[in-house]
Length: 111
Image (cartoon, rainbow, N blue to C red; front, top):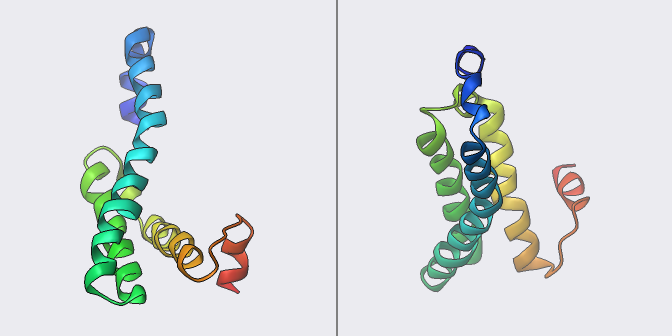
């Protein structure tokens, strides 16, 4: 929080805000393309589905603290790890076994 307070003047630059927004819009697409596209498709050829899902989810979870850990202490918290694990497994589980996915399925999967 102190980092934000001390560097609040950086938000005066419209370029910084535009780059931040562009990154926020583009990054999720590239993450999904890599983790669900390239890595999962490659793993499916070598392993059974459930191992491929766990493999993709494991590295999806591990990538976030290593990528953003320098900038965000929150990414090292165990709640983030739990949420990323759920977000790494549930959509792929439904993709493989149901071929349909609804947001409400996340909660029914957990119960």
